[in-house]
Image (cartoon, rainbow, N blue to C red; front, side, top):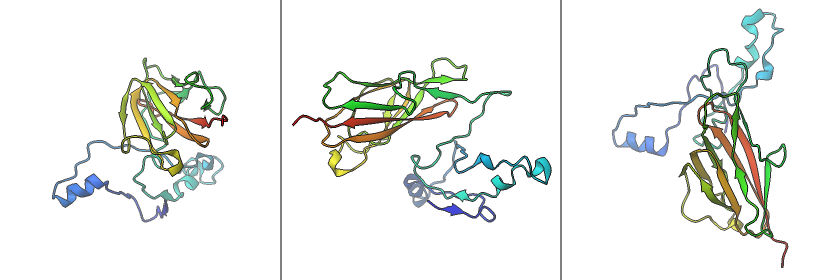
Length: 218
């Protein structure tokens, strides 16, 4: 990842492998959808004491360097911009009512056989729509078994999870779901992964963590 000089660069784009293939085949690229985010923006720089008055409140923000494009949604687009109803006073917020702690760290233990299960059943606050849906991105599902969900499983690299000792991340994404339930797989060392939860309509985000503890039994 790098930074761009925003005095000279207005748009920076990188084609995906599929996009490059289309160009190589002589096909036209006609985007029909796009998303915006404010990754890299530090709103604490909003300066209401600017000598230029209200027109200068955003001087420091507008002079921030832009983040260079990275074609990886695990790195970019964490803070998508969305359209909300006029006069919205509070931003939508995801909560996990069953979270064991404020850090949203869940624990599975290989010594507890099929009795412990992580249930990620998020709710959305400050949002009027009923039956909210979420996207769940498990950054490394090597030590986890997704036993239940009501969405669409996508973005799985390869077949079965790689052995954890190979240190090969095994990302899994479940889209448009209301919940996912997880059990632990057998590991020979403790394993911890992040699960990014995104509300499909408002763009609200929350990160939970699941740690799998190896057995202490010989």
